[in-house]
Length: 150
Image (cartoon, rainbow, N blue to C red; front, side, top):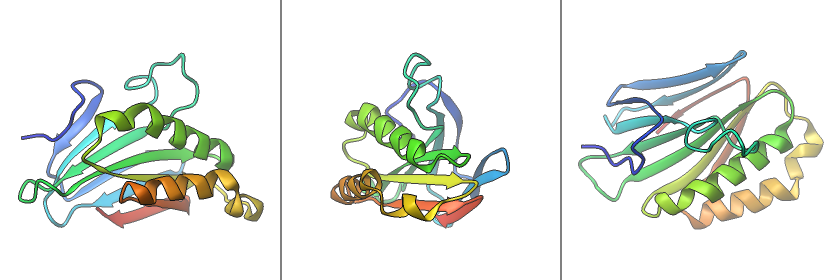
């Protein structure tokens, strides 16, 4: 049984131990030791149409079938060096899709080639972190590779 509220744009749907998305030497890896149901969806050009230019790359939904309250959504952006534009893409995607994810904790992940120190204290990022905290989630940024337990 899937907890995925979307009926389209599904790239994979299973209980695999590790899920990886990669693009231009940037990589996100979610490790799934609790055997959660994972649904990976294409956001850019599918869940959010091409006429909206500001959208993230992927949405990963992780649901614990043993504990129905354990539902996590991960908005994933694999970005070059424009960290702030990546924040905009994550924020816009969350704004558009979060109404379908009311019972999920919301998380945002960005993997960039390089993070420049002036970007780290940006008000957009702080606003996004606060919003995600209200939705029982968090924001993680990384250079080139991000691996986490989901």
